[in-house]
Image (cartoon, rainbow, N blue to C red; front, side, top):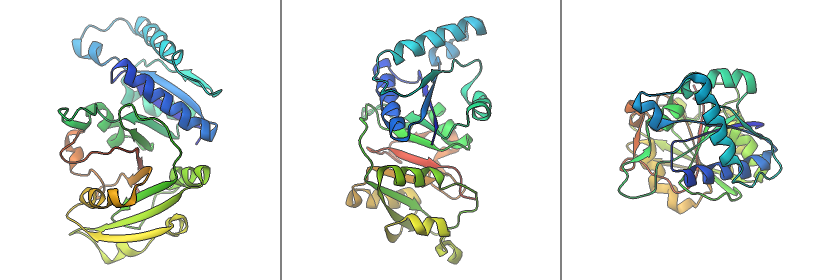
Length: 265
């Protein structure tokens, strides 16, 4: 995990800075480079964007101001001013910098706020093939000792889908508990685990629930993990919740970081 992308500008400045600091602290564990992009949600909605060159300079200046407020921990932090919409820019950034992970934040923790993931963050998770780490608002970095991975199927067809979680487990010397949630569409072949998955789990438990995220909510507190890990897949976590590129808190919320791996099939 050598290159980490952090989009800013979707939250209040203090929240963005806290998120950037988390990304830096996380990246230091991997000796990774952090690439920072700045998004101007308010400007884009107003329909009064300045020219691309002017906007690029504004964004670069804004990113540099935020970088100046964090503890860089000796790692490389590079400002990447956007010249286009983030979802359009990511494939280009990925080709140029081989992005291994995107770090975004959950929406505000205020109980009155309806969303766990807003439209832009939700779209990033849904539409990119890059793993995404979602962290709670103002979350402070801490070592990852226990990971809870929730799956419906042990079948993994995409090459290197498990690479990010393997790196996390190796770097932090962490243990991973596997929760398999058997839903109404559970198939016998779903019990056949990919060899790489079997090699990295320290314990296994299954449950029967209506959906994967219901199973996660039921078992989350009894495991006390430092990280929750799921796959992005057609029959997977958030499948129905993502229909509008958003996730409501009434459907799912998490007080710990959530790592969404690229689709397993």
